[in-house]
Amino acid sequence: MTKRPNDGELERSLRAYYHSTLDGAQPSRELLQTVLERAHERGSAAYLKPGLAFALAGVSFFFILASSRALEVLLQL
Amino acid sequence: MALDFETLIASCAQEVYAYLTARLGNRFDADDVFQTTFLKVQRNLARFHGGSDPKTWVMRIAINEASTFRARSRRELTLATPAEDLPLPGADGPGYDPVEDETVADIAAGMQQLDGDLRDVLYFFYYKDMRYEDIASLIGKPVGTVKSRLFRAKEELKSFLEAHHDQAAK
Picture (tube, rainbow over the protein chains, first blue to last red):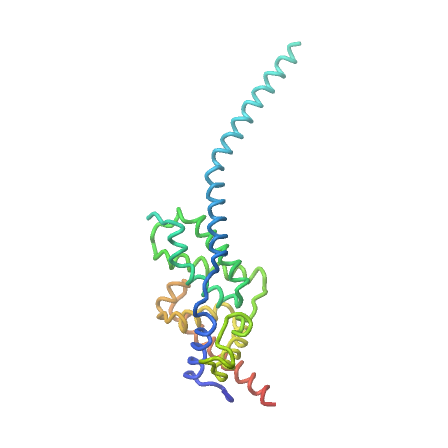
């Protein structure tokens, strides 16, 4: 190409560019493995989150209950 | 519609990776965005109700992630030329074409000058051989926008190549 390329020349060049640079491009096995592992970790975390939140709420409730009882006893002294 | 994540990743990993390599210009960034894309796919899998083809849905997420990545990092590089990254036949090897090699390098340099939106339509039209309507549906824009982006991308590339050769000739 020594001048402004016409449509046909440009299209041929574009196809050559894409085929030479992208044909056979694929994620490495390590990359796929990393994605699957991270997805699995996140999946497990998502499964645990509601249980963890429920447990924390329960512990907080009993803590407040115990504190209020202790305060009540202290005030009666 | 229940979708299995591993089946989904197996069916469209290569397509998504080729797109990200073309869009982001190098495999290092493509690896990053490939991960964020599929983690987002996994996060939203339960909300996918089959309104479109699962591969199209994943590709839309990849397009959005690539745009976000570009806006965030502003470090898009030219698609690595074959000598740098993707192996091509060597100068002494069979099938080596020095003219084509030079053309590929010129186009790679020109691509660096294009906006991501323009690069997207070129990729889908010239590499994936998609119709205007399918590209429009994929990127969520009217057909007219696809046509005008394609025209603009080609004009910008032609201007770049012309200027590049004028400069080289001096």
